[in-house]
Length: 209
Image (cartoon, rainbow, N blue to C red; front, top):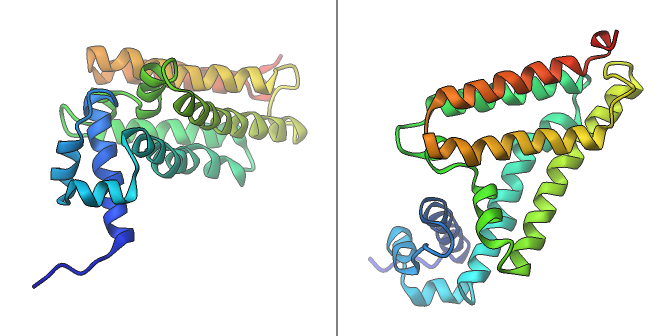
């Protein structure tokens, strides 16, 4: 039977195949031929939806990685009564995800997809740099805003700078991803998360004395 045309589904297949390809091989090393093969489409179908490789990379950032950051960081913090407990929960959930990954795949093997794009493409292309800056801004702001709310409800120490803490916590996560994918040892990530959680505990107002 002939294939039924489903442009939205085809576009999504291309995006998901592109994400996997860029995550494993980098953007510059990513192959359009492998993307087409993985998505089981023709090159004509790919270029019907995306004008070129850069546009495809932009769409991966806009439509897959931006929502992923919102899912992991923004949404859990938005309605949290205690931001420090919410942040602790995010770190616990992240560690469980790492522990459940298959060998030689995922975050432990490939690092953070956002960090990978940032280190590779932000110095080379303004379209990538701007999108990555937006992603990191959303991430940092979600933490800073949550900490401000915690200060207002006397759960977070009043002497700390929420924006600076947010910058630090995002740097811990992305820095550990960048370094950790070299050694590919779960213990490294466990140690980083352990120290990050201890730092979060020190931000509670009860720890200010």
